[in-house]
Image 1 (cartoon, rainbow, N blue to C red):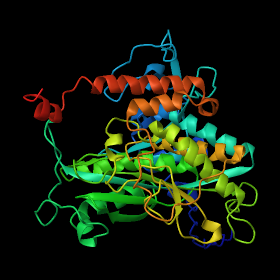
Image 2: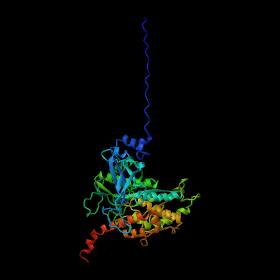
Image 3: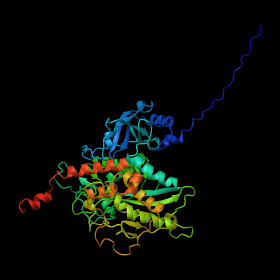
Image 4: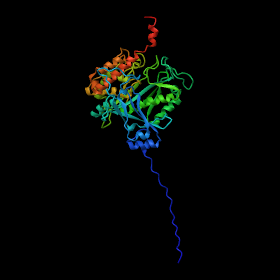
Length: 479
C-alpha cells in the first residue's frame, strides 16, 4: 500500500483588533443609565460610593456604601428631619407654620447618574453621586433645595424659556483655628509670610499658594468640574473662582462640589478654606455673584436682546423683578447673621437694589457685552449661601418680573451706595420679608417658606445665646 503523502497546512496568523473602549468610560463625570454606571465604576476599581444631597445649608448629607450594594437597586432613605435642623445641628421649636413630620417618615434618595464622579482626595477608590429627594410615593419633595430650584426652572420651561447662569464664588484661605473665640488670621504662603490685603488680581498673591491651587485644578478635572478663571481678590488670601455659564442645576451642582473640593484641598496643605460671608473683621466679605440670562428654549437665542441688538422688554422686566423681589428673597442669598456683616456700607458690597450698566456699586450690574451675551449680574448673594436656593431665589425674582411686566427704575450712572441701605439689615427682617410676600409663597410653596423661616429663626435664637467681644468691651464697665 502506497504511503499516504503528508500534507501540511499553513495557518496564517491573525491579530484580533481589540474592541474600542466605550466613550462613556472616559467621561470624568456622569453616565446615562445604571448599566453604564456599573461599567464606569468597575473600570475605575471603585470600592465605595457616597450618595449625597444638599441640606438647607448646602451641607452634604447622605450615605456611603459598597459599590456592589449601590448597583443592586437598593433603596436609600433618610429621615425628613435632616431638612429641619439648624446649622448648629439643633431642632427649633414648632410653630404654626414650622412643623415636623409627626412620624419622622423616610424620604428617599434618588441618584442622579449624570453627576457620578470620583472623590479624588480619598485614599481608597471612591465615587460620589448627587441625589434628588422623593417621598415614599416617588413624588419630588418640594422643600428640598435641589427640588426648589428644579421647580423654578419648570416655571421658565412652561413659558418656553431656559435660564443660563454663571456663578462667581469668593472664599478665604485662613490659618487653622482650633478655638472659635480667637479671630481668624491669613495663612502663610510659600514665602513664609502671612498674606496681607490689597492683592486684588495679583498673580504673585495666587502664586503664594500655587501648590494648593494645582490641587484644586487637579481635583476639579478629575470630577469633571470646569473652572473658567481664578483670581486673587482684595482681602488677604481671598480668592475667587469663576465657572463657565450653563444650566442652573448643573452649575448649582458644581458650586456644591467645588466648596467641598476647595475645603479638602486646603486641608491637605494644613490650612482652612472658608466660605463665610465675613470671616475677618475689617476685610472685604465673600460674595457669590450670579450672572443670569434667559434664552428661548427652541431657538437658543437670548431673549434679553431684540433682533436689532437692542435690549428687549423682557430684559427690563427681569431687572424690575430683581429690584422688587430680590430684597424679599435675600434671606435665601444671605442666610446667616454673619451674612449681614458683609452687607454694610463702605465694604465694597452693594447695599441697594439699584441697577446700572457696568456699575459695580449697584446690586444688579449689566456687564458690557454683545447682544447675544446680554445678562444681569446679581451682586448681592454671599458665598455662604446654598447655591440651589440662591439661584432659585434670584431666578424666581426675574421670572416674576417678566410675567408681571414689572418696570425697573432708571439705571444708576454714578455711585449707588451713597444713600441709605435699601436692604434688610438683619436675619429676622429678611425672614419676615420672605414670609409676607404672597407671590414668593406661590412660587416656593408654603411648606418651604414655613420650614425655612423656622430654621432661620432657630439659628438666630442660638446666636443670641452667645456673648460677643463687643459686648464685653463696651458694656462690661460702662453700663
